[in-house]
Image 1: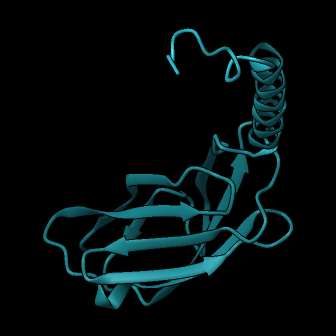
Image 2: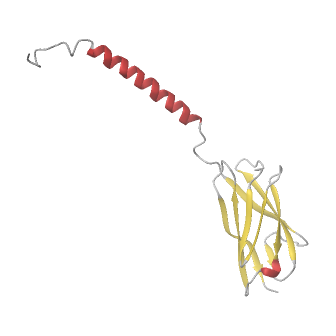
Image 3: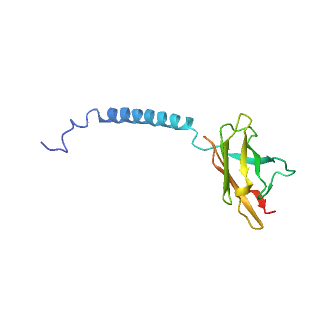
Amino acid sequence: MNMLSDETGAVGLPMRMVVLTIVGMAGLAAMIIVIGDLNVVPLSMHGNIIGIENSTTNSLLHANNGTKNVTVEVIDVDGNSVERATVVIFGLKSSASGLTDRDGRAVLVVDTSSIKVVGEGYLKLVVKADGFADYKNDYALKVVDN
């Protein structure tokens, strides 16, 4: 039997192609719907130091000045508070961390006696939260020696 003259394999082929195309398109549509519901693009947020205990400024610390409570506020791009964000201030051989509350605020206890600086230096601020892009500021808090 000659394969070119045998038409038994082609019987129903157009119908099979149509059915497979419809099934494939339905599967593709289902995947697009599922992927569309995911938050693949992280939201933006911003961390601000809004207060330092017994200080008239929120951007300057003095080294060897005891422990200081530093208040950090974390907000999203719409100005809404970001709850349960991890906030870390570090650098100059010192570090402090905490979690934000319902108001998007965290109070970090910074021990200035452990800070090693000659002249001036900076503490970094890093904020991480689920669903948000990480925030980092390498010059969040200026530190000067006494």
